[in-house]
Length: 287
Image (cartoon, rainbow, N blue to C red; front, side, top):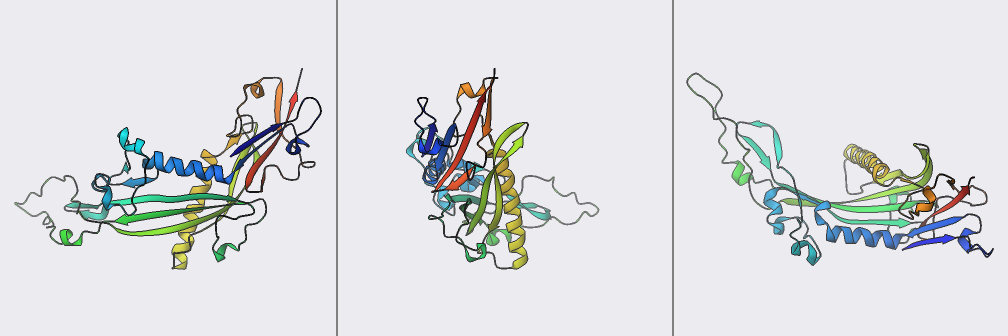
């Protein structure tokens, strides 16, 4: 899943370190396998629901697949969220149960042989780019049969004191569910952040094909693109001295400077090719 190479001291050079001092790569299969393990071993990171659904997982839109350790150590299947309030309904307040589940997440590095991109994204995947796909399933408990029995409090009139506002009325039942597939295209670059060369991700396009009204689709694509871009910038931005590829203590010594290998001789750095994300590093040793 992860490959690391050094220039050999006696003069023989590894193929990937012909033009640099240090080479590291991660394969798409490794990333997808890690994502699958996280979703199964920490399902509460990708499954959200109100207490009524979290306590009865059979009500969820998609059955949660978890490893035996989750139940063995009494870890939750869901992150519990408060019910969704009906805006403007205050006498009495009413809220609805819901769930939201990330059911699939995959990455595909160029040349793009895992994810089939929608036509709107002009496939095939361009060189030095990656694609991602995720499926989100969500559901909302409408509960109209119970809501029809809700008796609104009368307006304030002389001689009548409405009851104090308490917890909202929440109807029970099974949610009405839907699933959406989102597709993302992006690339990786090196930028200077806080004085260090840093590996960072940039999002080029996002598409949710199932959304029909053009305005709604454009707004949702915009929201997802901004969200994914900022989340990846926060979570997947790594100084080259300490990255998910390597963390060698000697690279932090004050007399060692870590730099990305220049172009030329390295054609692309970082590079997305051969189903891998590759980084080529040089380091200088000072006095």
